[in-house]
Image 1 (cartoon, protein in one colour):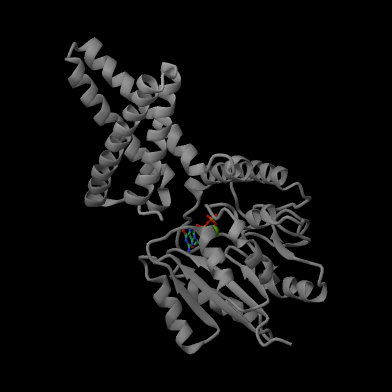
Image 2 (cartoon, rainbow, N blue to C red):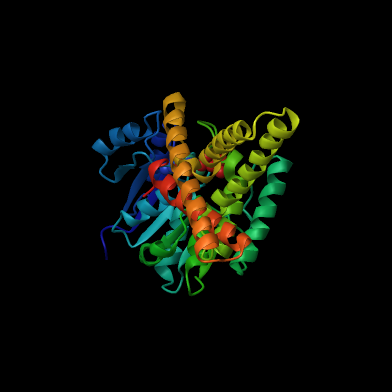
Length: 365
Ligand SMILES: Nc1nc2c(ncn2[C@@H]2O[C@H](COP(=O)(O)OP(=O)(O)O)[C@@H](O)[C@H]2O)c(=O)[nH]1
Ligand SMILES: [Mg+2]
């Protein structure tokens, strides 16, 4: 019998007020079991990691991973799950909305049945519930659940659950293939696995958050659509590149609108029109990519934004030169059709802009 039965991974961002209560609740719920709790905190400004370390000094079952310069619920969960030697690992929110009292039943089930892979805390099986949600949230959640169930092709009632327990070896096997971008982590695991994972759902009622605030509400819908795209087409065109290109197209529209206003409407010189239009379009593209494509690496503050904007403009200028050079070469030297030459030039410029700005503007390696 191993000494460590269960690890509980708790992703946190600004949950300092909830940490002590959660540890106390875990202790009560898991009395008699051999467990450890791993807080994975993304350098919360409210000092969540310090609060957890304070507890860890007197309780060695509590551990802390403090990540610097990174954000993301899924990647936090994955890192936490890979940081334990326990054979079974659970993921639970740090805001007390998940009901920790069902953890022992989940662990018992996994220990009793070696063929069972995942125990899932479920709001949508008899005995479970969403507590005090308003009708708007119920409707959105129902829609997302339906979509997710479609992607998963399994009779799972709560595929959007963020509360589950799984054999840690399964996660370690799958990590290299998981998308880890803001996806619902359980759905990510279950869709990544080549063999259908055997699961069982355990009812619980979603509690109301009393301390701290939700970080996911406003972005969750977009993240979810991005994740679905990634699951379905991500292997053909990576989701970030697709977003970058779509924003680039919008930028082209802006460019044309500004140019025609200046050149046709205000009768400026063509050169002035092009210069202003290029500036406006690049700024627009920079801001939109910063807010959407690289939202978890978002540059902030006057200094960060200005520095990012300057380097983005530099990168795109080189991209534009490459675009013109390639198109010209294909058209003048290789004698290809003008439209094909131009399109290939644009593609080369776009790939350059994407690859180089991702690294040098947003620091993604
Ligand atoms: N490490 C980490 N934890 C996060 C991040 N975003 C949210 N969390 C935590 O994930 C859990 C669920 O987030 P929450 O905002 O409550 O989502 P909601 O319940 O869907 O509104 C909470 O414990 C959050 O503190 C993040 O970027 N990194
Ligand atoms: Mg919550």
